[in-house]
Length: 184
Image (cartoon, rainbow, N blue to C red; front, side, top):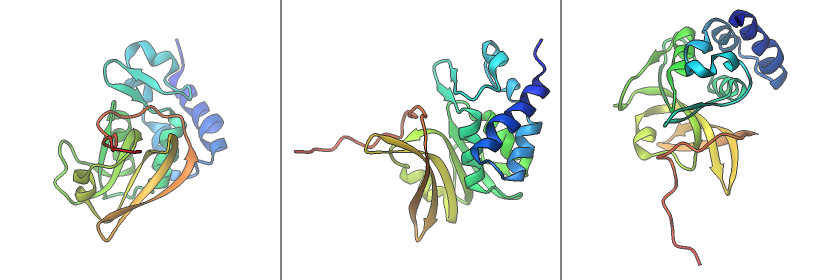
């Protein structure tokens, strides 16, 4: 039987910290929220490996380091309202709740401070941009010209400006593709 608490500690010390994850709130949440309870039963023995976990018929759960780097870039603060979008958002939502955020369920109706998208996207839908408060933040893996990078977006004057900060290998999330356009 695997000692999940020991595996969780090893994840933090051997994966997250060496990859530059330093946000104390994120590290504390990841140390205390049991990831093995959020992965499919067949994947529990490798819940703390630094790899994405397939979720049948839905996509993938992000690898711990990618998720921690996104959360660190998001700089979540207690009391903020967050939306988590992805194939298996429950673990990330539990991490944000452990930090003290309120998780918004279902279709956002505005006044969202943070959006975490667990998957690679080509574009952010207008509905999500509109749901973010002015100055609100969004993190995801952004696909640009075939290259996927972790990115932080900030809403300024109604538009999301992106800062890309690390290359990533993250599966695309369905529903976030750029519409096909005519080219010569």
